[in-house]
Amino acid sequence: MPRPLKGANPIRVLLSGARPAQQRMTRDLLSSLFVSAEFAHDGVEAANLSRGTVFDIVLVDVDSSLLDSIFVTSAIRKLERATPSRRPASVVAYTGIEPPPFESLLRFTGANDVLRKSTAAVGMGECLARWCPDKFSARSL
Image: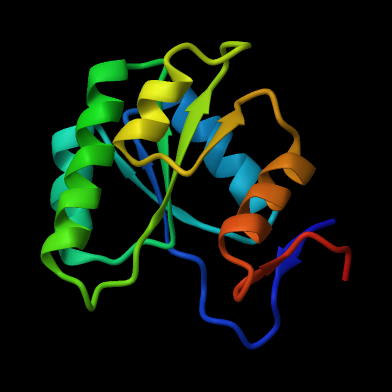
């Protein structure tokens, strides 16, 4: 099972725009990987949280609102451009739709990757390891 690296700082995860049921499912999935997350109701709240906290990875729920997803991704990238010393967050579009609609638009606005909601803990672990390799390992420990 993928796990956080021993001695590494905790991964800072933000889930933006997910409905309450999806928040619970994602929280449970992340908990199984020993990772916790903060939740933002919408893109405005996510952008505001991102101003005060540097997140390692932002999961943007595309299914709830594509416009919110584009807004929060653009807002995070704008904040990073305005603050060059700030470490960039990995923005991952989180969707249950296969293939993901508007993937090229999301990537154009700054999303790094797309993760399917149907993914098991291993898929989420691989995503965390890919975008937070200094804090998470996809290998079983």
